[in-house]
Image (cartoon, rainbow, N blue to C red; front, side):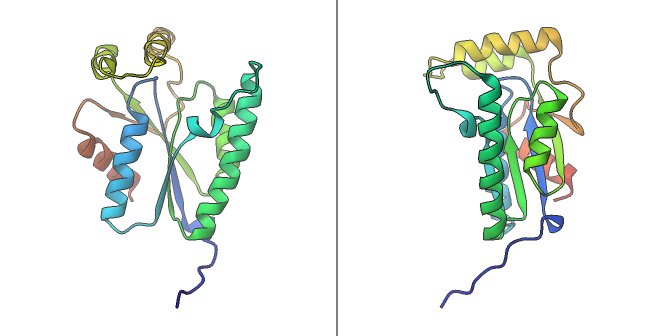
Length: 178
């Protein structure tokens, strides 16, 4: 017999948004954090927010993509909280404060922001064997973000992602106090 779980109170939950330039390793660190939280027996969910806005209906409208992502995030977050999740790990490159505020509005638990820091040479090296055609575009975006210091200053703290993933994930978790 299974017992029904009640919806998690968002005040008992915590969320983190991993951000940084394209190729900084946000998705990889999120996956490693999920593995570590699972090992620790902590009820978690990990969401790569790019997947919540990845669609094409024949027109280019970044504002529509943002609105769809936020609506999807609200629904998915609600479902995870209803299932008993207490720790949310999100990943997305953000450029502007209004993007961060939109994400905060969609995520009921308190949200902390961690910027992953890595140099362009590391991004290029890691991406060299990536078979997806979009990776070259991502590297060009990363170069532009470095030039303009895009997204910097929106974080609560930064972590250098130039070490093995388990070390980076453990540092983020520890610094969050999870």
